[in-house]
Length: 254
Image (cartoon, rainbow, N blue to C red; front, side, top):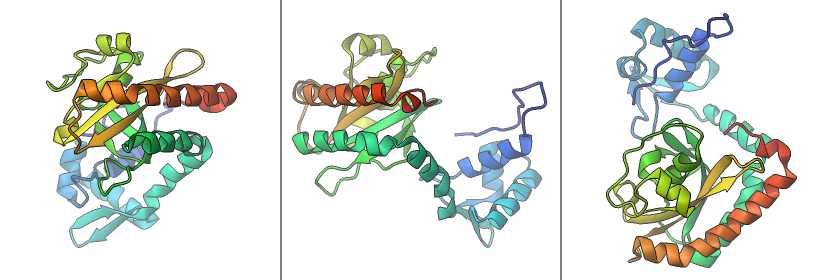
């Protein structure tokens, strides 16, 4: 994935290109790319190596990036941004009890995610009572290859045209919208079958998606829908009721 910060989208001078470039350098790191050289970051961000060097020197000085010879890694200090969001929004406090109920009733992991471009980002995750860990808070996955991504694309106010997996029970965002849920078997090439439903804001716009993911169990997509949908929808209704009571959270710019 190339992350570009070269284009200034504004014409009123209210855009700091240097800040955009620094953030794009931070976003170059991922689970697949935890350790990068300056030249690799330049390729990932489409930035001039000299610009990348200045960004890295600044980020190292501020404590967000560590340097080991010619290689660079993120430091734990970057977590302050995610922690500030979670604490200020109180999203985990609100949602986690309902995801834990899903986990306790089904034995599956349960999560909440939002749409970020063509990816989903996990905001809350409750692992199953087993060693398998499906994801963690902050995990990014392609929206078109996940059940939560498909249902978010179905209800999002945008013209996304995802390429759906052949193993997806839901063949199009339109069908997902009609049915109110999405199921994906062998999600992300694993042995996980996931089912997701949308969480809607009081004004009818999509807020997020929640899912439960069954790993290593011989459940077909239809079997998972038949056995999990009632539990998921019950949690969805409770979370949506909480959004009615928390207008600031309901208006969050997800």
